Amino acid sequence: MRRYCPKFRVWAYKTHKCPESALVRTDTDFKGIVQRLYDLGIHAKSVTLGVSPLFQRKDGKDKLIIHIDLRAERFVLALGELPSGWAYLWDSKRIIGYTETIPVLKWGAVKEYTTGIIKEFEEFLDTKDATAVKALLLLTSC
Image (cartoon, rainbow, N blue to C red; front, side, top):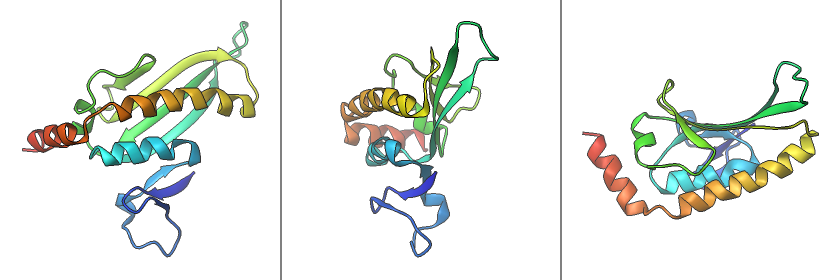
């Protein structure tokens, strides 16, 4: 994972001037989600992808997990209902997650498979009115 600066839309290297608290830990595949959230006034802390074997299941399935860790609890309220497969993980109060059981795939195939999931979530974010989301965030920060 690398550090991305959504304010300046660049990957943050050692010479980058923004504070660490403004940077998002992610990889290239999730940069579009991070940027769209930022443009809506929602600040992510990290966006990660993981695949975990489901305890050597006989059906040969793995669990695909995408986590979007937000910097504040109030950010989750601003998006409303999420697309199919996505959910708010209320126990953490700051994470949006996607979980799906998939056939065991090689890593390259997993990355290819997740491209569609990422694109769908980006399209969902594109439907949001940035002015309305920012207004709602302003009201909930009081």
